[in-house]
Length: 340
Figure 1: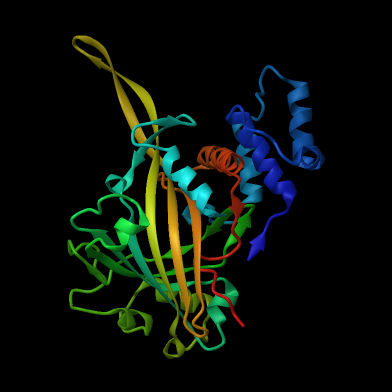
Figure 2: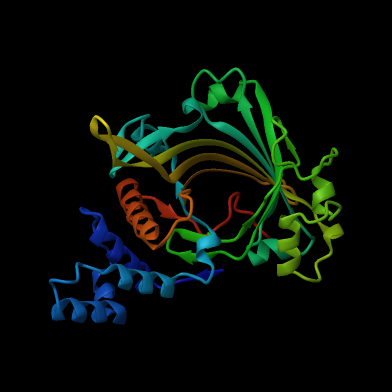
């Protein structure tokens, strides 16, 4: 796990603050000590009429110097721990079609959480866990009919219908404060209610994929790339994770002028930028029988073909959410597998 220093985090916060007003800055003394900030300040002083707080070129240079190679192909998300009160506050903070931070809120799944069941695999030595490389069999369920409301009581008694199953593998995380960057491999589904994006034309199960029987599966291929000598047949379940997940999309709206015979017409263009997931998690550690419960929050970039400008917006929003709700950055994968 690679973790950047506070200098880099503070720098990204400073860049984000120049794009998003009313963002409180922390560790301001550290910002002033960063050599790149000093260079930018000198350039601004030489020609303040040409340079805003940060030029587009300088932003690109700075971001690419701070982020790992290949970051545009990575999953990028902020991960936090939250107590029950904070979770409930976040659940109520972003109702459907409301506006906050300059985005329109699109509450997914008609405002009702979906259920995820994850089975994590590893060997007896917890090789993948120690490397920060989760391998999991994930199954998603939808309540059908929809649960009466989003309370745990209603969700617990709902009738759940399976949507799909897939195998997912994630590589070494690169941490910038609460933000995780890493490669996620999962390009097909073991099963799907709509028969979409299937790994094989014939019926298969999770073990077929995990033990390498499905040729070309990217999750297992990435695992073998990271661990060339790993024995797939040593894999077995080590943790079960149950998650009720609530999701809200942050939509950016912009105006586009279209010329028609009757004159210019303004249309609203919508772009999905970020997705907030609020999780009620229960983990069962299989080797010890220990059961852990937690509330978690994640903010992920979902924009297609995201770039440096997206990163600036993302870090601005991450900082605002963390400060507003008093969120605690997480340095653990979902479920917090404990190794004795």
